Image (tube, rainbow, N blue to C red):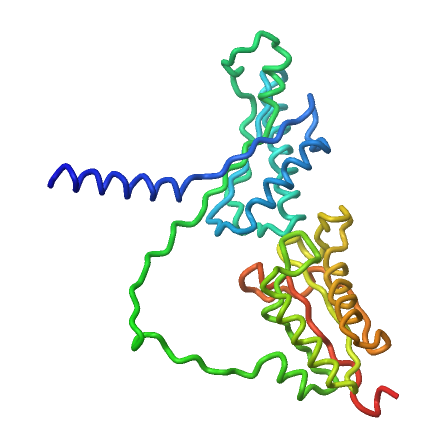
Length: 287
């Protein structure tokens, strides 16, 4: 019995540790450079894309140099490399609040590997190491039917469109976008269709579609990973604009604009990857 109990506990611990496993990525640099090579940028973007469905607790970024160069020079260069990687994270809508360490470590010892070419070994030391730590899983809470609160029906976006007047700004709280992309998440498409239908019924509403991004520094726009252009907020607004046209809404009733990161909501980053509708005219005012 005791052996069985030990086995169960060991199995549980193994599963728990596995679920908490840190994700790592290395980015390599040319000699004396801190600009990220294009091939390494593409590898890093693939890594960032893999983080979309992970609840991140922290990200650590550590820069390194090879054994050449003075200590002071290597410390500065390794910090510049770490800062360059942080900038790519920020440009691709990864919240800077998650990045807890951005440190240049200077020179590291030559790697002990099965490689005789000294240049190749040094190349492996000109790098940045990225460590992503997921949040621990939330404990399961057993609920009964009596403990589940009955849902209330707050005034939703469809009601806001129905009762909308000039000057109203309608936030699509449930229209969420993929990190770094102008396309909505699969779960948002049905909601977007419902909004389009509501706008078709209110033919008297003329409006502006405003696109927003999260996590970029100051009021900069984020990079659209699809086109590599720094116009993601505009691309999100245009995505919704084109969707509405396909659903039968007259393009004369609407325009679209990118708001960059001028108006963060101050909550979870995913809700800053958003669109809003600003009603500009209603009824006879539009004629």
